[in-house]
Length: 147
Image (tube, rainbow, N blue to C red; front, side, top):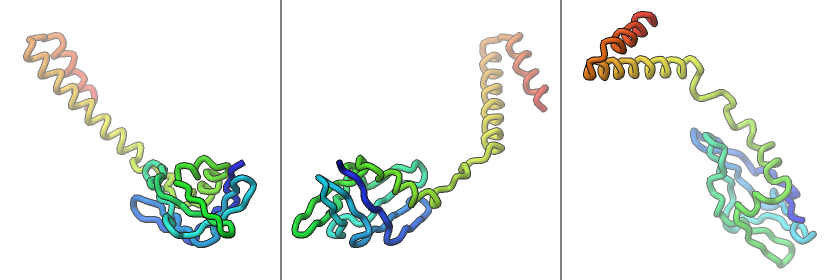
């Protein structure tokens, strides 16, 4: 059974776009083939998560683990399959993600109403081109009723 025994960041850094979990020697351990391996920062040393979609960005980065004289390299996408990895990662990063939507409902409503109005204008133009008086009158009534 493969599992993440311990995932503790050395520190976590947040910027506008990413959350970076910086790892240091022996702050990250995995169990493989019933053997405990400790992270050593020979290659990759951070996990980068996109704050907009919560996706891990650096899935191909290689992490190195050591047990005595034995070393193993694992790409992050394989570590993501280990038992408890996602749970521990979420516990670390949850506070760094904004739970507030980036766009308010009022802003969405404003954009939608603007798009509806623009669509009515296009349909009015079309009815004029086609000479469809009934559709023209119906569409213009929408404009006057929404004011």
